[in-house]
Length: 164
Image (cartoon, rainbow, N blue to C red; front, side, top):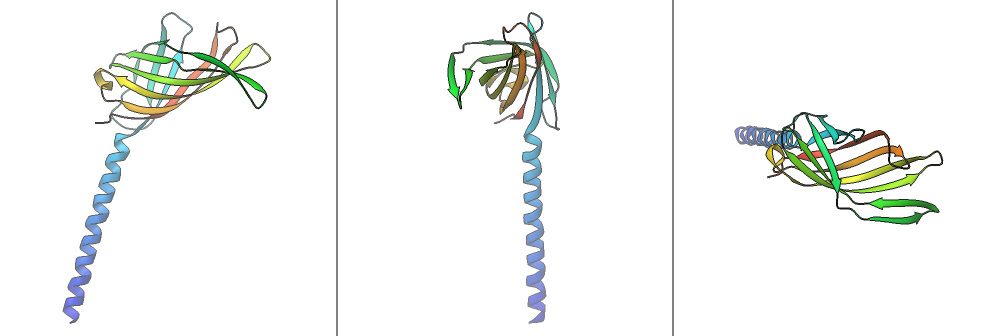
């Protein structure tokens, strides 16, 4: 009887070890697949440029190139007594490793001192080259002159993976 109890206990330990190992391997695989990135956008020159930098390990590598925006609508609303403009541009990033596009929803708020602060959420819509199956989303923030002539800073961060 005692022998059967020891065999059953050993079998449970082996099963628990296998399950724990599979769970750890699964979570490690999913963690390396998803990756945090940052993109610094600069539109002080023509054409506008970007630098993509991975913040965590994964398949996406550092890249740089040109970006452009098109195809948006603009609407003005009042939220809690404050006027805001909302745009939804499509941004295209053409880097050395491929091209990807995202759709953003940007909220602009004018400040008293001729500057605008903006925050956005973005979602990857398509890609080519190294970004052929890129999926992801994130947030962006920037500060610019109210007339759009100069930006002080423009940075996006988010989570991406290569999907399929």
